[in-house]
Length: 557
Image (tube, rainbow, N blue to C red):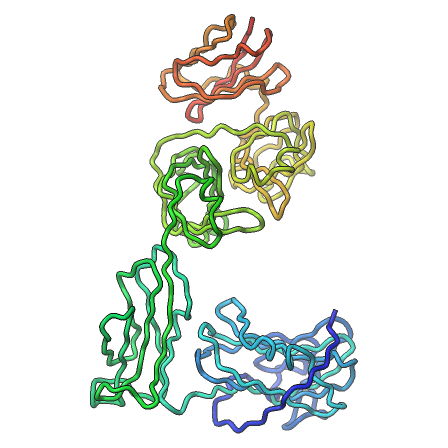
């Protein structure tokens, strides 16, 4: 809903000898009767030859419903230079909330707030109707230090008919010597891996050269070090930088090295962040978003996927898990070459959040040691995941005795949500990880292992491949562990020994004959586990050793 407000504004007239950088601001040329040349965002506009401010044509802009825009992007903006924006308009009909300017300075794809009130109408309001007479609106601005473009737009609203004419965006290049730092923007924050920063300059009305070969030269001072003389306008490259706040000042001087009168200078500060060391992923999760961290402990890869060339991986240690989102493509994790549970060390990056999920954006490639460090999934219910997804986020979990609604599919479709239901409730199974695509959807009760996640507060579980779906009873007799020995069987005194040809630790799960998990833990090779609390009867025992699995019947007397 439009806010009905009327604010007086000052009309500024001016004389300018600058350059108009707006394309076809006088609307004199048209591709056709509904599209003026040079304008890239055109809605409900027609060529008008009768109602005009000057020249042959104006643009008639109307809306019978909703907001209709007319706009174009202006590139080549010089930070620190003056620009004068002017529009002429005539409101034919409406209710006083009919038209406004809606423009903005831009830095890349980011909109800047500089001059926001002026660029969204007089004092951030609607253009006055002027009793159906032509009106003028002008804004004089200095381009922000980070600006590289300007988006010029006007709008009309439902029920309004407005005529536009004689628009301009004048670049007032300085007529006196001027120096500006165009990159990086003042206040830029760099990540801890940064050791070099390039300073780009823009010089106007001053010929920089060797002494007595031009108007003078440049002197710059960096971090209060000895001033450096510079006889060209090339970029300044600052190397061997360390974390901290840095400052550079550049100045134009005459051929004797003396400051101009008045002095002509430009300066910026920038910061290179330092890593904060944390021992565990739980410590990392307790950190401050936007800061950079170095995890000194180890963790294990749970799984990952590549989408649009960017990697999403999940890692977990004994304390917590976290999603690693490599949007800058520095993480060489490859799901085809890095195995689940491979050990990770030297994890570094910036802590942030996306759609409710805490994530680490890596700044450098971690170390994969080649060691296999399995993670035992936490067995929880669908209801527990829904209620406490923040507690389990990015950790390996398991939901037993669940069914999956195939939603008309026979195999899993990538990046789709399916309902996963157990005895406590229903949660979402999302096919986030690429290896799940094409896997046959189980039609009977299964135990589902996956990575716990969420999307804007909605709990999800991400199975990684077909091995994360287990029908326990159907797996009896499966054994890929060499030299496996489970004894005694039957168990009579409550102590069960497990050994194999491999000396690795083993994850042990015991299920009732109905599929309910009644025990889970880890055992060293050849050591015993105490299951004296289990009643006599027939059970199923599953053992995992370095991704190899065995499932057998177990008798307890």
